[in-house]
Length: 70
Image (cartoon, rainbow, N blue to C red; front, side, top):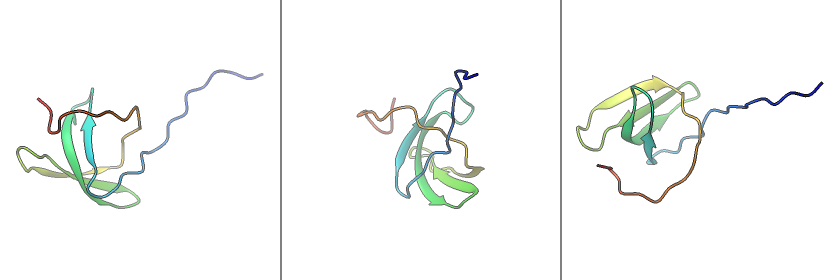
């Protein structure tokens, strides 16, 4: 029997990409600095804080918007 399922896929980050994360403690504007199979290093464009996290994001939509946002 077939059921409705939701499929998630790890986002294929690109170095230099400008991203905006919504709805988590990681929310905000970030620039992608480095990517490995397991980790992604991001930098906040305002504070310049750099973080290295396990890969975690999933694609929702592309938008044209101010960056960094207000």
